[in-house]
Image 1 (tube, rainbow, N blue to C red):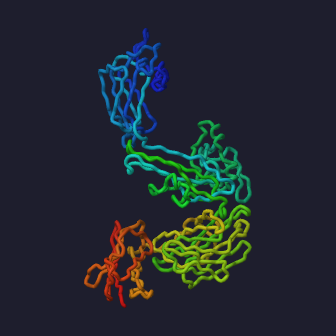
Image 2 (cartoon, rainbow, N blue to C red):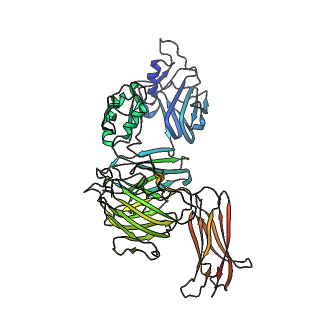
Image 3 (cartoon, one colour):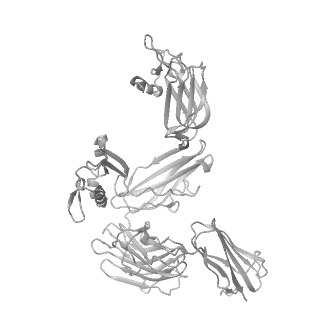
Length: 631
């Protein structure tokens, strides 16, 4: 057990004061001091690159002269220096396993300077190997290279009571040394109040951690005022607290000042507030070299922000990681796009049916519910886009039920979707675009909606599409065509009563991300379905009718992109043409053939074979079909 005198002296080794020192020597007329085996442990607090270590007594170093303390000869005459890099694999029972880098039993240098190969170090031990008394005035560690870990947490951005939508984020990034040995991870979170932290105290009765101040009174759903501390079941009290509106919740929540005033024995943990704030997003992935100082203002660059919006508050963090002293990342300017006010406070959406057959065209109904539009604040919307797994085969109807009960409908059943946009007779509705990954429609603007007041507006879109993978999510985005502002993403939940296929058990307006997910049977192992030449018989004679064919297939059950090839052969087995060779993700795929070979020469009429090959880590699959060319 260290004496208080020794404890008080330890700081002298790192106080940058030439007149103080840690002493293990016998004072004149004092009791004998044992200096052999004295251990001095240093924790740098984190891992740092180190290349040099230095220590010395008072008045020994030219930069730390102390003529009034002429103890330059009281240097450490025998020592052992041990290091540990602070990594988890070098710890046993939470204690660092130290490795000797220098053992010196006959030191004659007052200023000991040890140069070591540059390496990560966290823990340092200096052990006396002498019976001669000594002192250490300063113990100095010199760094090298880049630190292995650094974190940056931004200030909280406040976008005001109007709330804001998030667009895209981008940043300048530079690497040093080996690119594969370093990384920069940037994440975001958004919230409803100005602190993402929740302060807790120990409940006076149960001893459990609770986030409200002592004596806090909350209002139940039935309008009763309840002392949260008086509820016997703490979990029940927590549920009531977390269900309160944000403003009321913050009125009874324990503040940082109140937390600081608590006795240590009454303090609980400080943790992330996951009710008023979202979790940190997954790190954003930005293609290297795409953003620089000249184009960082381009709103089209970067990647979409994943944190939920609209919300008032926003925060970013950056994590810098390096696996080598010479490798690092640097971040220059960072920009992200916001727009406010939003279109509405929140949009709940769902799709039915949510259980379908794999690869079979199905008529889906997509319902969109703006739960509340603040008059004079929110912009409303008149355009909606649905993300689809493949190209939609048909848009059937678009219906708007306005807040006053008025219903407007347009029927696009049977309309050719190859020549868009197309309007209905009134000009109020339109199918604006249909691609391999989305459909976009326009309708009379929704500018008023208030679910709580019984005046909710609902948009319903019926369309026909196929699903090729279990858990396909039909995300959606609303837009206002009169502005250049950002679109607003929807939240999955119960948007409307959509009949027998709608199996929601939660109330209308409640969120549930599963309401946007469509399931298909898990049975079966095929990765390619609906493989065919379309048309099977074609005639490349330049008349504009069936001049080419497309080898089509639906790639199903794929999680990641996989190698795909499409070849055409003659009946003798000779390869005529490779139509495609590359990586392809799940969804509909087609490769065009105009009847020519690899040299661009027209092939003679006849029957040809096509072969589609797909390779994944788990298996490979091939399908062969027939295509006929005639003149």
